[in-house]
Image: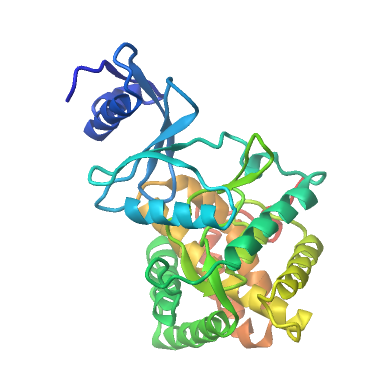
Length: 362
């Protein structure tokens, strides 16, 4: 430790002062900005769904200090994907300084204008077109298997099994019968096939309103991309348009999705002979894979990681899940089982509210 004067300041100041990683991060930041005369005051912005924590501080240009514990977070991958995204002419945070051994980063701060906060019925078309333009740029990138892992069947299945373990088994405390396990296996096989049989491209994996920020220059900055994979082309589109935190009317989602289809065809990402119906099937089914997984992830974030806030978003994810599963004959057995077996248990839990109106705007 050097002689820099370190302070921590947040709503949980007492806890931060006892946090050795926070103090070490503040010390490291002070060294990076080379200011021996002013104390570094870290102000916590909280954490994301992983184990990264973000802090603003009081010196220099607008930067974020990031605590990414190396036991759980791969900072080297974050840096590499940030550079990859920037090479596609999409705005990712500039990396100012790193210490990957400690898991400390100093990165550009895009500000607080998250799409989630600023979008409304008046500006939505423009902002979502901007988001789709960025997505198309990312999907036109050249595959780099050494950098970007495959979104293969094994990984798709591991994600779906998070639902079985954490949402069904842990949150609802329900034990699956052999017949129910067979039903899930059949459903999961169908969803995996759709994911693998559509064109494969760059997948951000969490391309939604809380990870897109309108920057001061009007560009849309992209964050939280370190888990990027190479997989189904509709995955990020459905993450954006059937956002787990923000719902848009069905007719609007369909209009946006089909407009994206036209642009993807024009760029050679999708064969021109793919009909609107087939494209929407890709979109719906890969979205269902994501939402089934998210039910498990949100349950796990609460039960394992103590992040109870995600429970309030479960009803909207249930709504997406049932709307799609009920719309396709092949998936209706899953929808019927969910409604007759799981839904009655869910309705007894404190987080539950009527899924049929979840996400509706007043």
